[in-house]
Length: 333
Image 1 (tube, rainbow, N blue to C red):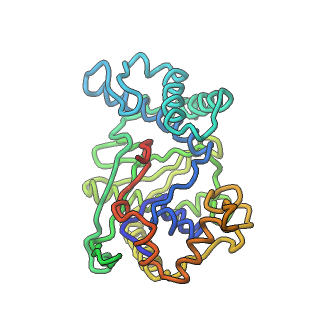
Image 2: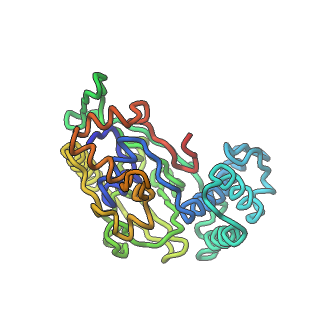
Image 3: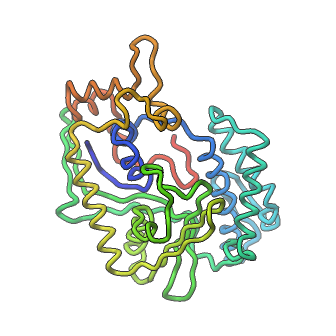
């Protein structure tokens, strides 16, 4: 397969199903948005607004403009139901195929309140020394092992592996030490294995190590801790990473990069698309009446016949091969 960048969702998809990774990150096909995932985006946006309020106060301003929700006053930001409803209306308007209603909005408001009330407001961004919200990163790893070069339909695509993503919140604890905070509204499980994530397994979590690696590259002068806040599944889990974890993170990124490049025929979770994850979590398994095949199966057969590069040339979008897409509350255009 082709690989130009890593992001936490792409690596998660790879662990979930290689074929799904190929369809989404090589061919740029878009899977359906899970309703609970969109609800999570709504909650993230509301919490981002609270963090941006704190930054606005620090700048001495009385209002600020959010890219999605528009102009917000400091007073408006304290109305949690109002800002959550604004976020809910924005995302449901732009993704009308995801059916969310009043009951889902009520849940979103409940989750936002639950997050800010946790441990007497410990993780309410308004009570934290906010360094940055929705910190975007796009970093090339300019090392010999990270170089790639592909010939797709006569077009040469080359460069260095990059890491891309968005960190929910960065909190300043002192001049030297900062904390990366990631919000989760879903279950505390590894969707690829079904196992519950524990403090021990989170210490080796690829997403958290990726964030640590990225932020150490963006801000090498700072030390970073990494925390993940499961709003509905156990609360706060905090990890202390150090130099050896930076090396560990790069080794994981290198191993994933080399593994993906060596995949000639992506594995399917189920050749018949009968696995419950295919049925419930992936629209690529939907059978087409005229062929009796799903898109997943059709592309599987095309790769077997023509190879990865030819299939990417015929069915993919080369302009999107190295682009970030959606994330950090930004919708894919």
